[in-house]
Image (cartoon, rainbow, N blue to C red; front, side):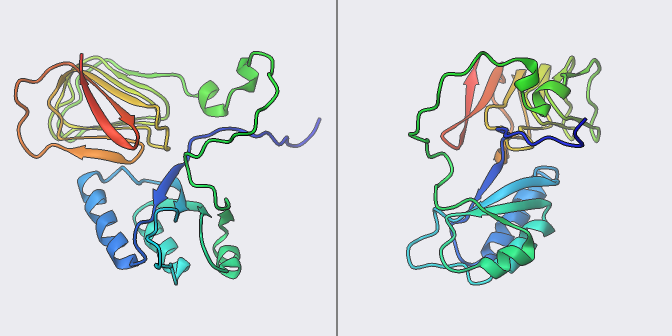
Length: 233
């Protein structure tokens, strides 16, 4: 029996879209986001994407950017659309080069129709992460974490935090913080019977509610075109 096997997969990876060459500005904004949602970046793999860097700007010190990301919990694994010769720095930092195709660009190459997939063809995350079910209220100061989907039968109190690699479903009021798609799965959703949250986030995109909710209603939150969309249901 072979000691290992290689298999291509489609594990979601977060892209950190770099929009300035000023590493200090990036650090300041990361600090703000980390303060608002401390667990958002906890050991989060990401690709440093430079496709939105304004024309005429260049990153001069890739190592400084890499260390800044690591400081706030991000784990860069590679770069995309990086202009210039950074071969030595990429080798030093152990980063892959994903080329010049911006994230989200569709591949026009057609592939042959394959047989319907089975459980054996699914990614390990899909097979090994059954839903986590929590049958009690989540009290203030408490944190509940799930690798896959998280289902909560009860309220999530103000000051509580619930985190999931997949979807979050709350059969009750959501008053604390909810962070879904922790590993970059942009198809994750957050659903609750009464949206009264302090903060919600999906795949790193977040919304902070600074004012008290007026007329709370059942809601479903999803990520569309890089922005959170809150639907009353």
